[in-house]
Length: 297
Image 1: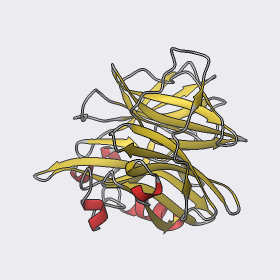
Image 2: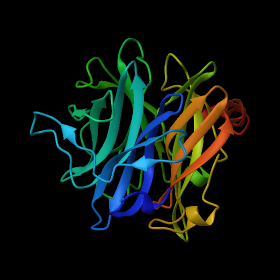
Image 3: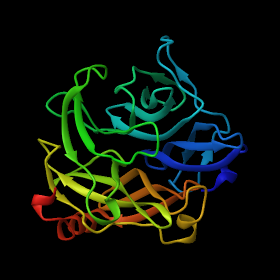
Image 4: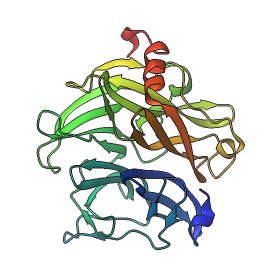
């Protein structure tokens, strides 16, 4: 998908996509407009490939003036719990990037909740089921700039307002993930553990490069790493991943699993939306056979 999908778009990328049923996909897309504001737009598709994107930005309902949506709202994630879809995204605030949270049941009305975490924080994905009876997230504290660090943490909440039990999950490692890491799509529950697809960043003589890896984490203690890829799953190799507004970027932001089929939606070069497909079982095997030694997690 390219900027032609939205009339005022300079680029469209980093989508949050879910499959609601047979022939029914819905998503929220980051659109960088021609005035370089960042807006969120809703889209629908019968097959997850051909999309109709609302030309107007998504609107939030909230009675609390302290809960804000800025002109720079970007990088959404979606998780379904029961009949409710939970949207997280990043707001640019005077204090740095801040995570927003909203709920919807129909993708027509979005009700904004309290911001779950204080700034600065750059990435946040909600688990698709409670952990020990509470909501749970992976998140990545940040700073105001192009973060020269980045560690993933786990946290829980009884009510989506009060968050605690923060646990370190993992941070940068050698090679393609040596500068920072951050959670991508919401965790995928498997018999072997939570599969977390994440992005890793390193800096070369040509600037920052964003690639895609994965980790398996314990089902009961999701901060405990079982396996983590030493080799990347996906990296910028195609022209549309290497050339764009931000070159050399594969940014995973949503995944749809149907049986053993895994669809990974990602932003390419901060310019367009791309799709990669794999067998879930093969991804799990790759994570286990291309991982660091346990002492490196």
